[in-house]
Image 1 (cartoon, rainbow, N blue to C red):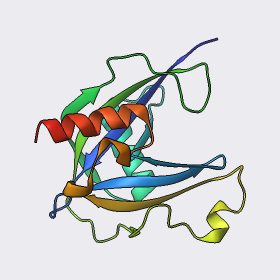
Image 2 (cartoon, rainbow, N blue to C red):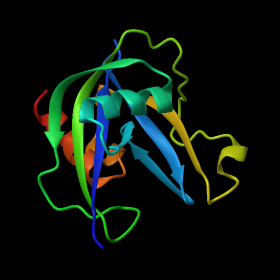
Image 3 (cartoon, rainbow, N blue to C red):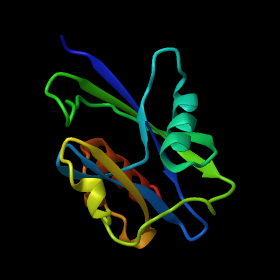
Length: 152
C-alpha cells in the first residue's frame, strides 16, 4: 500500500552565512541533505523539527518562517512506494558551541561506516558562495537550494 511520508527539514545559517548540512551514510550509500526527519503521528511540523534537531545535533532551536513545501510528485529515495512531502523552515539557534562539525564531505570515522546495514551522520557547514543545488543529494533539497539562491 502506498503511503505519504511527511519530512520536515531546517535551514540553519550561522553568523558567516554558512548553511548546516548533514552528510549521511544510509544502507551503504552516501547522501548530503538538510537536517531534519520524519513527522510522527500526533506531532506538529514545528515540534517535529525541534525534536529532530535536538536528536541529531543536540541543538535547541526555534523554528522561523516557512520556506517551502513540496509541490510536485516525489517518490521516496529509500523505497518505491512512499510519496514524499517535505516541509522546510528557517531554523535559529542561540548557541552553536556544542555542535560538532567536519570540514570535508563524508568525513566519517571508519567504524561509523564499517557496517553497511547501519546509518551514520556528520554535520558540516557550506559557505554561501559554495552552495549549489548539486551540493545536495535529494531532489527536493535541490529545489530548495535553487529557490534560496534565486531569492537572495
